[in-house]
Amino acid sequence: MKSLDHALDQLLGMIPQPEQCEPASLGRALGRILARDISSPLDVPAYDNSQMDGYAGCVVELNTALEPLVVSQRIAAGHPGSTLQEGTVARIFTGAPIPDGANAVVMQEQVTVLDDGRIRLTAPVEPGQNIRPRAGDLSRGQVILQAGRRLSAADLGLCASVGLQGVDVRPRLRVAVFSSGDELRQPGESLGSGQIYDSNRPMIISMAHALGAEVIDMGCLPDRLEATREGLSAAAETADLILTCGGVSVGEEDHIKAAIRSLGSLDLWRIAIKPGKPLACGRIGRAVFMGMPGNPVAAWVTFSLLVRPAILRASGASVVRPRAWRVPAAFDWPRPDARQEFLRGWIDDGGCARIHERQNSSVLSSVTECSGLIEVAPSTPVRPGEFVGFIPYTELS
Ligand code: AMP
Ligand code: MG
Image (tube, rainbow, N blue to C red; front, side, top):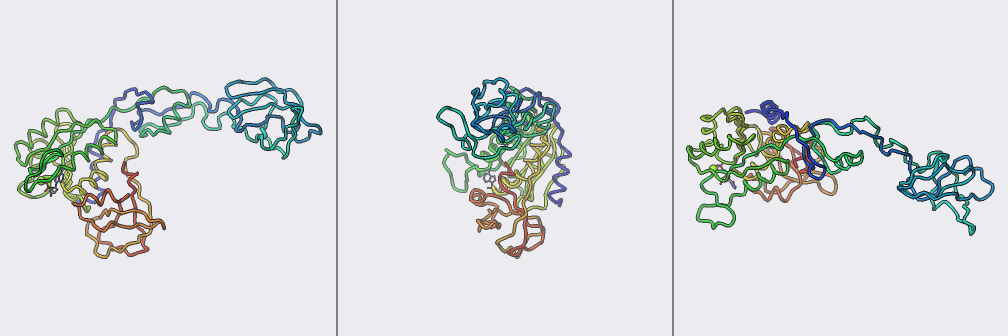
């Protein structure tokens, strides 16, 4: 059985990097993968400007004035002023351009305005004080975002700040999603004896969608080999990635692996993680196949740790692996599994990791009631106070 790291290396090696790109307006680019580096076409800010409402002047004059200073002009944001007359100051507002001849802004709270309109300073002034210098944020020609980045709202704001209306992004990955199992019914249908609701398919569809994929809902496969083969080969006609859940264990009712072997190749099966051991990966034609286990927590964990990186890599993202924070454990885990374990837990107010009391892979509420996965190394007990890896859900979204 491969370790998670080795399985992930192999899986990512199987995945082709996208070459195409398409334009996206800023309003539609959130979460998309940037196809090319973006360089700034201008300095930001493009001119020295005031960080405060106050008075702009020349430092030497401000600090040595014997008489109150005359306010010779008023400069509001969006309205450039004129060269400052010697021995005077300009009334200035936040974001307004600094006039030639001024090299500091005194905030209005540090000024006394006399009845005749002249001002007196109440504190000494430093050169550059309260001025946001030209190019203080970005310089013209500087690479501001690199290809492979998953675009955030702030990234799109940064693009707008240099005047871009849109960006070149990678096309959305086409992901086909199946559930499988004769016991599954859909929400809205009534449950007969021995039947359960199909919780995995909406969960997997939502996770793939949140990663920017174009999801094709392929429905639920019955536990029959021929029907499974037909469903999977239909998906391979259109999808880049085919996802299934259930039917990948060693039972007589598990037909997914046999179907994949007969239609293409099964390249990876069983990974040394708990939950999630039976994950199966392969190919059908040019489509990559990933079969997750049926237990809902195992499906959620294998999606988070393996399918997510695969989707991101196939979509052209450069960062695909989640990061774990090292935190002290506030729990005891005396009988670890021989596989690497991923416990559902959270960080308490004291900054320590705690675990949910029900860690069975069928208990989906253990995912919803927690906020991260806690890594336990193979066959390594955890005592309170020892450090463990904590992967917050934000690293998995
Ligand atoms: P399997 O891997 O097909 O043997 O499924 C393992 C367990 O997960 C069984 O208890 C299944 O009933 C359950 N299961 C499989 N698929 C789903 C699904 N889509 N939603 C909820 N439970 C499922
Ligand atoms: Mg099944």
